[in-house]
Length: 366
Image 1 (cartoon, rainbow, N blue to C red):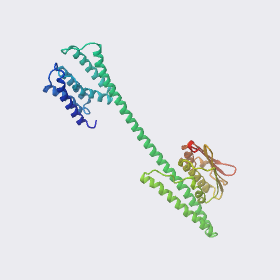
Image 2: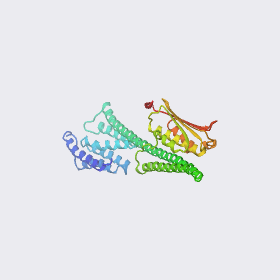
Image 3: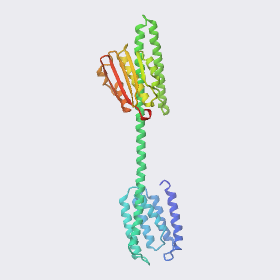
Image 4: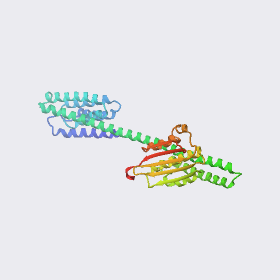
């Protein structure tokens, strides 16, 4: 207990004063004198030393209680200290010590009350009463121990969950950064190559490519700033990428892209973000491995799932590259789909390369 000194003081005052009052109802017992007061103060004093000397403090408390009773002093308040000490011993998990101490004390109480007092008590009910009180003390301590362990376990689980969520958030941030950088830098690379190639022969087309570079660089700076602000401030992250921005993504891709959304409707933020990033990564791969090809993007909003199909007509990505790496490119898209309970397939076709993702939708959106 954090306030042990104050608690021990309260117990000490209670035992001394209440025991003196108890004498007037037990005139057959000895009057509380200096020896009795010393014995009454042993228990509270041992509470102050309990954490440093747990076994010794419990033993001295019980011995002082037994000596107090042996001296014939009044019953009642003297039992406060041993009850508290036994309870705390069990609550702290030292069951064996508590069982031995309570057993020995019970034997003394039975012997004392049966043979060593002026008006001895006897009979089965007397024995059962003493044993029942001891068992109740031990049971209360055991219950307190279980509750303490439960609180500690809940705190541990909460801490682990917090660490897990923080780790997942960092992984999400890393994936967001990869998608943003990979797409926009690939776009800048493609457009810069186009601008250099057309600079002399077709300046107007070169200007268009440079304009696309300017837009892509602005976009990547904006998204990087958004993610970095979250890292600095720890604020809840609002999705920076949603399906309402697909048209902008298509326009900035530098590809001949046709976009079709069948029965479009608002979806949960995590689904929209994953769908956006899958389309973005697919366009990045098309721009990198199949520049100049035509790309079709189709999103079909079914009752239970969202189907995303991105197909290009160029040579596209070599098949071996689709399986390489971890957390980037095709593996990264698969991770996004799997995180939502969906699937993603990617591979060459007769006409080019196709990526298809199926993302399940929560029931409330169906």
